[in-house]
Amino acid sequence: MIPVPPVGYGGIERIVAALLRHFRAAGHTVGLVAHVASSASAEARYAWPGATPGGWLDTCRNTLALRCAVRSFQPDVLHSFSRLAYLLSLLPSRLPKVMSYQRHAGGRQISLAARLGGRSLKFTGCSEFICNMGRPAGGEWSAIPNFVEPDKIDFTDRVAADAPLVFLSRVESIKGPDLAIAVARATGWRLIIAGNKAKHGPERDFWDRAIAPEIGRNGIKYIGEVNNEQKNRLLGRAAALIVPIQWDEPFGIVFAEALAAGTPVITCPRGALPEIVDPGRTGFFMRTVPEGVAAVRRIHELNRQACRHAAETRFSVEVCAAKYLALYHGMLGRTAMTLPEQKIDTA
Image 1 (spheres, rainbow, N blue to C red):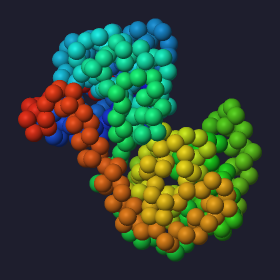
Image 2: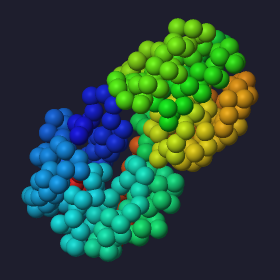
Image 3: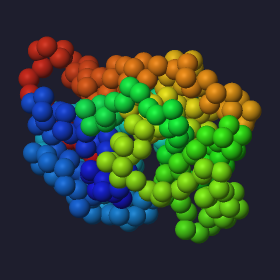
């Protein structure tokens, strides 16, 4: 649905683009199956012919396109960040296949795929939370987190005394922007809200009811969607990122981006967040507005260098790409030290 790399929003597409660059820089030969407008460099590129996710006709067309790409490229490993259904015709083959989930997982389709794929198919989740959702359905699962490229995010070890709080995400009810506003108002801190908002439907009603009336008052400012440069600058100048999620987040790349900037995180302990935030070191958890207020008042206790260190050692492309390569090596029955140049097809 979105080119690799994305022009604007596109979390999974950013992950794929970064892995592609990293693998090629390490000497691997990589093919890419992606949106027709993708601009990422690869040894071979193939376009998905169908653009309607879930539609039977486009599912069949994309399944066939992937099969043809594999026949043409002859990869040692096929790694899919796309739809499990597109692997259907390839599941019984001996070709090592990795299916990665950056969303909630589980269900009969995974059970069926695990039976058809057998030992040739492995699953990864972007967090243990996602893996624990998928494991009951079957298959072998490994948690490999989403990541950032620290060299593209400026580290700021000190911010101004009046640095604002920042909410950076889609401005939707499940992300908790209304709670961030309530915390900011109660503490007297300025709050900058950045992210796209819904144009219609229930989330637009949420914006009109809970967010819009607060904009421009009590230090609350909305700046809309931001690009990479603006995001870098915004996070680096923030006292803390506050995104009080109200759903079970599969991962949330923005939290790792904040840590890479040296910016601590205030959020709720749901989904994968307990795997990302170290309370009292790189951020705080809140369940209620009063807990959020208490967290903001303790920001001075957190060390921005510790935040950057966490990003570099746990959520960097170098660390996570090495985990994917180790998985490929294991499936090929070889070690990283003796493995010759591989061909990787990233769908």
